[in-house]
Length: 267
Image 1 (cartoon, one colour):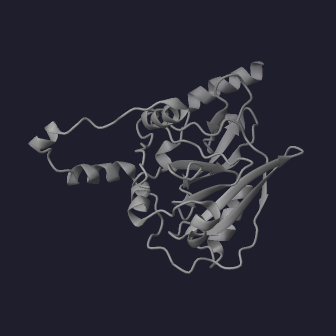
Image 2 (cartoon, helix red, strand yellow):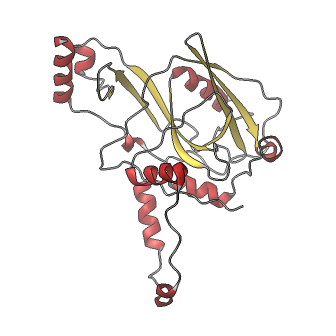
């Protein structure tokens, strides 16, 4: 069954990306894979400038022909919470975060390495809690004494709904990033964004400790083991063109962070 790919936008020149709602104590391990897919990747790093991709798309668009005006109106909109989430994501300009859960989900990486790495402060307060560290002369570091955590972001295709896979941003901590880095260095699973390579992801929390189970899945096993149709070349190219880049990162001005520090110290 053909899939409908929902057009996504980067947050360029808008209020930028707000990271995960709350930090996680991340741990994880991987299960060994006896054999890796034999095919290589036709792509290198796929971090694209979406603005350039949109410009290219506009250049190739033909003028509308007169007879198109007589065509029936396309079906738009929908009902239910699924339609609500899809239109919300398409209209907001913000990337949707991938969240691992207790059930295994298949993902496909669009990046062979992180497209964004940054430091993040987490301040317990009402309202906004996460703030990007300025690294140099950062008021939250220097004046409030808060230690930031490292955040690493990847573009992934989420197959939670196999009939409607979605591009999302998976923001992880160093533990998960190390697992993915090891896969990216292993000749059986490198690069991690190979066309014929997918991963199952599951998250398990016990006694306030979180483990991530990240296992390679061969393309040939997707249909039999997961009842998921592998992505075709054209579908992969469409997702590539919609990949997010570092412009999604939200950076608060230094004077606003100084105001936040005064609030913290006065509490």
